[in-house]
Image (tube, rainbow, N blue to C red; front, side, top):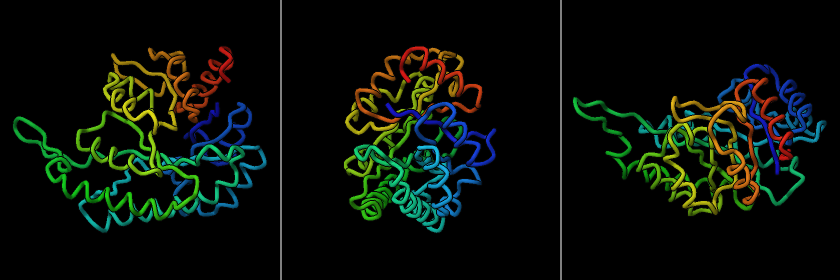
Length: 272
């Protein structure tokens, strides 16, 4: 199995993340585009990233900005996000050279943006649910564009569960999964913190599940991004699922200490 780490806020440079990843014996770093140092204009300095990783025998996956919203009603905003994805795909094509296992795809992880809601006296109305035709049309165009941008490159855009897929999002995700360039990420901590409401949907599309975010969590109170062993998740079951599917696993803790503890947890059980 291939295990990686996220970019951590305690590490202010790529070098610090690379050194930590190498010291812990992990395989890759998931570059988080929510950080200023991993914005698209920075990633396009690809030689810098490639040299840093190659010197340590590492590679990258990419996590798109969690605010990415390709269905935004403002066409100028939506176009900026689409262009971000296009340019990220171009970077991913360059990063492919770092992958030793050519069977495993380079992955670009994305969230589904819920959109805004309007609060009424007795309910909340999700605007994407109300204007579903416009919403799904955006994803039709998005899928077509991603297929064109990726072409025959071994790259997958993988959709992550967060705080529970909305009904309209499930329809959009299922539409995307009809294409070979899309897949799923199972974030097991988010899943636990939302009382596993996304599990039936994820398992329904298990054949598209190629990426995992691994961290511990609890239902009451809802917590995630805990070090492995600090929560309530049946980690052996989830890791076995990842192994069977030959999926990559990001140990998605938020601190160095929690990451180190998670690595020790895996090593002590012969999983790493």
